[in-house]
Length: 501
Image 1 (tube, one colour):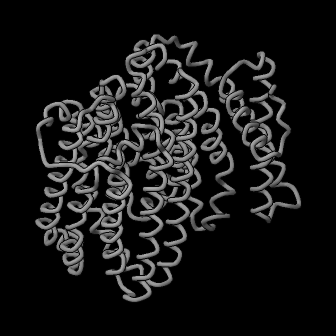
Image 2 (tube, helix red, strand yellow; image 1 turned 90 degrees about the vertical axis):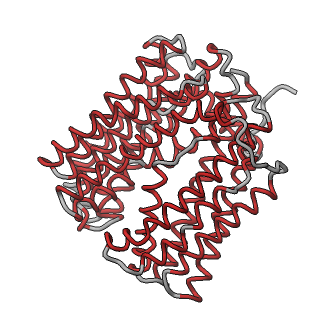
Image 3 (spheres, helix red, strand yellow; image 1 turned 45 degrees about the vertical axis):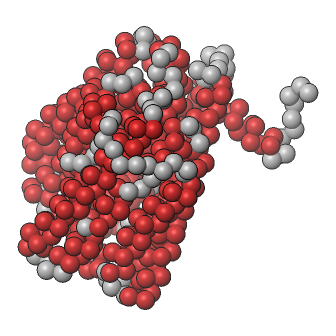
């Protein structure tokens, strides 16, 4: 893997993680403000419409952007076709919302939601006319532009919605805010990209041959994501569903806040080396080692401290989420271990594999979820997710390793130090937990949580760096991250520059 592409991917991953964290921060602040200006019923009405739109979108995920990124020499006609396909999708979704508005109001037993859905029906069409040229921000590894584009729309959209809430004081502030944010995104897409798309479907067959598998994968992924909640809500009731949803959000922090934005940066880089399997394999190893090194301790650390995290952040009424979080954290760790393989399939033009793997996951998840939720409630859904994740991960690596000419030992070499580190971290935190419950700090949650977090982090870093040094301090994730930290400190003149002139 060339040093230039590796550096650009690493910088891009940093931009994407920063964008995700900024998006979450803006979301939390705006939610805190809006919650004081509007009633829960206002959020509920809009929530019904969003659920309906999300269900319709499951069947309309085209994946044309990935098709353009995969085709490094895509002509203008491909961009024009992708833009036209997005417009057609937006029109179909808008019409679908208009048709479903009245039945949805009856189903939810909320007559007011009908008008909300009618107004929000414009949203998919507006999103569809967004300039397809912005896909080049990622394709050309210009991730700073992607950050600016997404961050500005999110920030300005939040400000507009808050101002509307001050004026209107009802659910229409949220509705109009969503539409204005979509319009702002469209305007900004044409300001930031010089590309001017035109209506055509001349390249429809080429794009559809690639994106049809992404559509199927997105459809299956949508069912996989919503199945546990549907089964819990049907068999265990709303309270169990609330526990599961909160537990899922907490347990999957590593995959949502770290792995997801990094994947957004990795795919364009992988696509640039799809003609060189050796280079792609080297990139896969490099990305896997970094994500596992940084990401694996997060779910495992959350699992070890869940009985302190939950009462500290959520209160004692949410203690039933602790076992759910601990099980889902294991599932999150399994996800972290295989977060890049589907990007390889896309880069090599084999998106069908990702669809079949999603189908396999659903095949395992359905019976396990129904059976275990009936016995264990929301905890059973966590067990089902773990079982499906493990089956898919083994199958996944049985495919991707031979495809890249890698051996199991190559894979193990990237993960054994972080795995050893998290095992040591958990052992230390468990022992510390037992001691704290018998100490004078027993009544104080926050100090106990802080002590466990610091001790766990120090243990993990000490074990990983110690093993790296013992094994010869070879080039790898540890050396790359330490090198990036050193360059940052040297650039800020916090460390002397010892490089030869």
